[in-house]
Length: 327
Length: 311
Image (tube, rainbow over all chains, first blue to last red; front, side, top):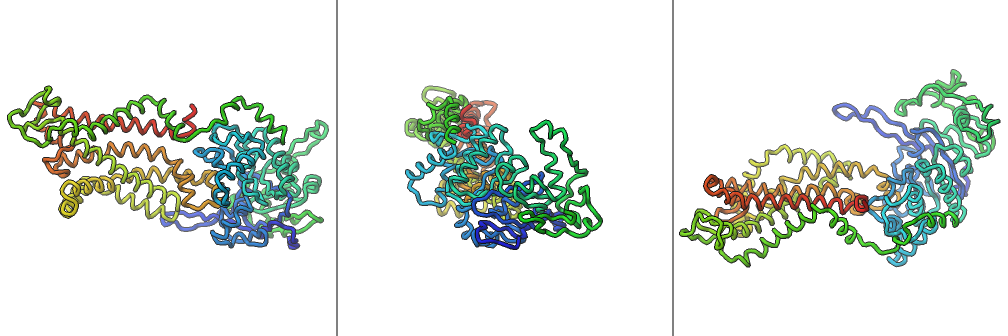
């Protein structure tokens, strides 16, 4: 990741987020949960970076830290040549309109006491000086853009279905015309039929408005559909980062191989021959990760040095980065 | 996307109902009306309120007028609630006493809820304040209230009476003493609700928008903790009236010739075997007020919740 090019919208380097653990009578600090431990990636303007990995590997924490919803322990998040991790609260407030977030749980991400209109209008109230008439018009326009009836403005979130609520969340994220949106598992809580609608909506919006997405998901097929490049996370670290075509056709890291082998194929002939790599054991605790490679405890091909030396992050092929001694 | 949106609109059978303008107050009132208990409670509460406010203007007998010849009378046309051992008209005393008791109840509740909500929200929302504020709350909870109230009353009665007059001084003393000794439950309940709310995604969404803390509290936190606040407010009115009664009962509240519901109860206790009605009337007034306020709060809580509103 050394060659940071001008067209990168967002560059994350060596991001670490550790949550302290306090124990005992005197609340002594006894360790850290290393939710994110040295993550680096860059996102180019207009592209979609998929971030995949199993539950608890630090995907969402990374996404939230990029928006400074958590304060990073170390590392930098450079957005449009400004280090977000180092901005003061008031400087951050000015930057916030440029970057927004779409949340996982459409039930929880909308305030149940506010009408749809006021939910979508909130960013406009905070960051623009529109008159209330202009604001109403803008809210209707936004609802229309995400495929909702603009007449729904006076309704409350509980009156909508999951997919419609997710659209409201998207409308709110779009309200300030951001450049960059973190999609934190936006489709995980939706029915399969609705998932496709929402993903297509996101793609359409990306085309129309030139948006850049960080698309966090554990659904590998969906990421393959929407993303340009994919980063695979395991236990707080990125183990592989490659373009979609390379990652899915020729995964290099044993963890990526195991993940991909679990995706069913909609072709009985291939499905019959699909070889699953079944990982043994559980993910180690992020408060006490393995000494060498984070994946060594479950890796089917681990060697002696994997247990002691952390693998280097290297460009194996053009556009394909991997952190593995044996790849 | 266009065909999707048309599909969604076509699927929505409620289309004709959506464009009508809905105001929050009308929604709340419509829901409140469907809660029978709340409606009856509201009627009784406002009935009592109007009675104690306008009653003394209509029923013009002086509540402190001693008519020794007509003492200990039962229910009659001249004295609908009878008279006491000094021949004072009981109806006039209850109406006059209700003014004080209701005012004490409402104002003390307001102070307690305001304090409790402020401390609860601050403790829940700002994790740095959580420890100090909650230990402060524990401190207040651990104080024995009645002795504390006695100390407050004996300490401040004289200076307050001197500066605000005997009645005004005692009133201020009563409401502040009751207020600052009964906010703790509210603070605890509100804090726990805020702690839960703070982790909800819509609060996170507001943070990602850049909403500053004060608007976060007013827009997202307070509307969502309104139900526990209302519950403690209704219980608080009841509690304040009863505490005031208890203090008057102990002889620490308003001066003896000054009727309040609690004082009337206190005076009537000695005569309970002969004249049970002297206890029943003020007791009934207190119970009715407390009960009606509780029902009203119940209905209001439901009415303010948009999820309950449509059921």
